[in-house]
Image (tube, rainbow, N blue to C red):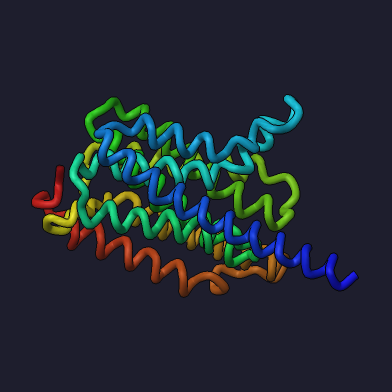
Length: 260
């Protein structure tokens, strides 16, 4: 019996080590292969192949599986896209994206608490909107709108489905529509912050929508917590802080010198 337990523990340790190594390889390879191939295709394929479990189910469950994995897909694909648009030589931003993606795979993605789900959603919003904005800046606004809707829908659904919030279809659609509207408005005056020669580029709209996503979730939790006793004063602090922060960003950090 003792030998069986020891053998089982050894297998578990070995499986954990393999899991960690494979995730590190995925995070590093997705970035490096994009940089050195000067194309996002191989990096995107690598991320998609890593999600093979989406299709390893009966046909009627594939769509549900796809929606459940949307946040993870958004993060992985966004890392590849941001790497590609940063340039074809290895820069500081590429190293940073490796750290972010490996950290996501090893530490953030496995979280299952309510705070963990919110963290996952906010990261997906920030990276997803950053990637979609940079990718569609010179394209028709419809592409930015559609991608923003997808990110908003996925982030909202990810939080709500984990908290068993009942029928949340309308809520997720509304969140997606708000994201789409903001992306459409910002598309005509894109502000992207750059940081010297690091290759880091952060769209203003990504910051704004990440703040909105946080306040939106805080308000939703407050409504559930207080129910019939809910008052606007219950969320006044975070709402005012969010509005104040967005106001500072829009008024004082929208200088055209940042504009692409």
